[in-house]
Image (cartoon, rainbow, N blue to C red; front, side, top):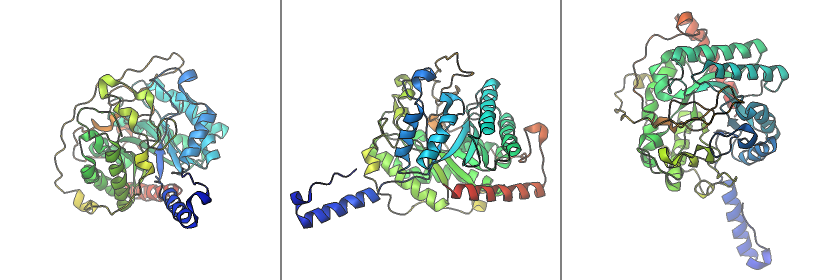
Length: 422
C-alpha cells in the first residue's frame, strides 16, 4: 500500500510525481493465474479445533489473494473441513477453486475423502463452478499407491462427477518424473497436473527456468502424444531457510525465479498454481530442512506480501529455447542428478481423523504443503503401453487409436474452456 502525504507538504508538482510513482507501483503488483492454499495453522499437525483457520479467517485470506489471482487450489476435502469452508469463502471473494482429494497409503483415507466429496456434491456446495479436482498429490511419487491404483482412484472421482452431471477437469497431481515414467497416467486424465521445483534440485534461479523446461521436455512430448494439456500445479522458491542440495533460499533468488518462470509459462501457454500463498509455520522441522519449507509463501503468515514480490515487476523475455514436441520426444536431455529423499516428518496422531496428514518430501502423507518437491529426482523411464481415459488400472486397459483420439480432443476442449476462466 502506498502512503500519500498531504498535498501541501510536497507542493503541487512533487505531489503529482509522487502520486504517479505510487500508482505505478500499485499497478505493477504481481499476478498469478492460481495459487496453492492451505487453511492449516501451526505448528505442525495439531487437532482441527486449534490448528485450522475459521471460515472468517479463510475469507480474509481470500480477500488478500483476490488482489493477485483468480483461483485457489487446495489439497484435501476433509482436512480442516476445508472444501466445505473454502468454496463459499472463495465465491464471496470472487475466486474459483481447484479441489484436491488426498490419497495416502491407507485406502480408508481416500474412502473418507470420496464420501465427504459426495455429500458436498449432493448438498450443492460442490458444483460446476469449480475449476477442477486432482486425486492424490504426489502419492505415486511417495509410493503410497501404484500408478494403477492412482488411475483407479481418479476414475472413481471422475465417475462421481459424471453421475452428478458436473463437467469439470479431473486429474492426478504428481511430479513430472512420475508422469514421464507412467504414460498410462497421461493417457487416463483430463489434463496433466505436474509439479516441478528447480529449487529442490540444487539450481540457481538464474538457470532455473531453462532447467524447468529441460526437465519437463519428455512430459511435453508425452502430453502432446495423448493430446493433453499441461497444468503446472506446483512450483515456487523459498525466501529463507536452508536444506541440503537446494537452490539459495533468498528473496532475490525467489523474485528471479518468479519472474523467469512466469515468462516461461507465458511462452509455453501453461496455466499454473504457484506455491504458495502464505508462509506456513506448521511445516517447521529444523532437524530435516532447517525450516526452509516454512518460507515458500508470496505472503508472510500475517498476510503481508513479501517485499521481494511487492516490489517486483515481471519484465524481460524468456531466454529458454524451446523445441517442438516431436523434437523433444527424441532429444538427448541432460542427465538428472540423483537427489536424496529427505527423512519423513511423522504426522501428529489425531483420533478424530481417518488419517492424520502430513506432507513432506517423504513417504508420509498429508494434505497440503510442499513435498520438498524434488528431492524429486526419481529416475525416468521410456514411455510404454498406456491405459485409456476409461481405464481403471491394468484390469481395465482400453487401447485403440480412435478411442485415444476422441478422448484427447474432448479433454483438450474441456481444458481450454475451464482454464480460460482462470
